[in-house]
Length: 368
Image (cartoon, rainbow, N blue to C red; front, side, top):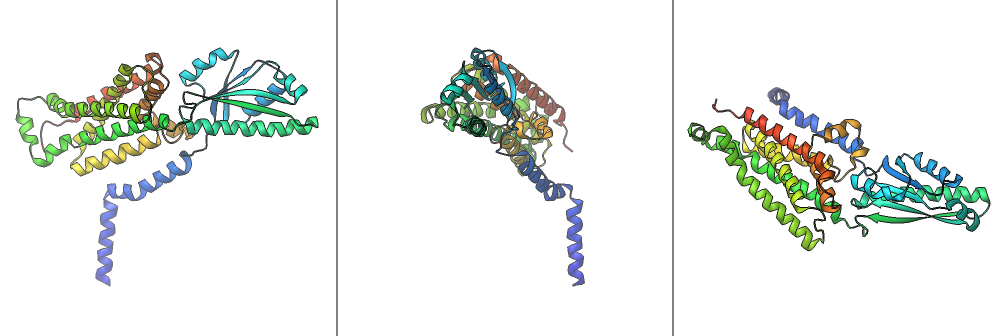
């Protein structure tokens, strides 16, 4: 029994001396609890909305106050006319708009019924459905309050319109997220084993003593993966158009340009992992665990970023997939031009340049 306890103690010492094992044992569960327990929620709060009030009577003011007081909505702006709504939706400033027609209060008092128009951005159908349901519930409660105060049935009827995806199909939200996830994983995983494979096979010495400069060695590793990833991109776009009836509404050249920037950024991440890893297995695990979870959880694909704690919102800015996801939705779904995505493309360009520069600096021309 004493020998067994000694061996158990030895194994405990091995575990506690290995920092990577400790990180997996304690860090991963804590991170998952924090993410799934506090950050990732299907409940949507503080959605930015716009109000257009042509009536400007006491009833609309009370309802606007009720909507603004809800934790689910944040009245971003009150517009003078509905002509400004299209621009606000295209910029992504608002997710929903409420329009009160002229004579809204008079219609309610004299006929007992009045109609308000609700317009939602349905490029994300789940989010659009959820926030319109929130608004309908607020209006329903307001109807009950009005009816009790007036002593007769009063009814406000929301007329809902879904922009960009009137049929509420899942593909317009599913395809951009899958594109970001597939390209991120394929590019990062393919490149993450490029340099470390040469180390494991013992052929890195041959490359280092060859007339090739390190810069050319790195470019030769990236070029095939770049070409394969671009081919994958066109395959995804073709399948989306043929089978999912989801064509590119905006400029195909702009979408391809943004995609190439994203692919180069992912290749730079994989290259950095490959340079620092000691084995192909470690590089593959690092690319999968390090990039798949952030791409799924911190891009707005599955969970709204606005609902997350401020710390995670800031952290999501470091995930390239978040910016690429915006580019796809703006160009592919909404048909917008360069003026709507220049900031995201500039961020991807900066990320790519920074990561590639770090990779060049970290690339060792001497083996230890």
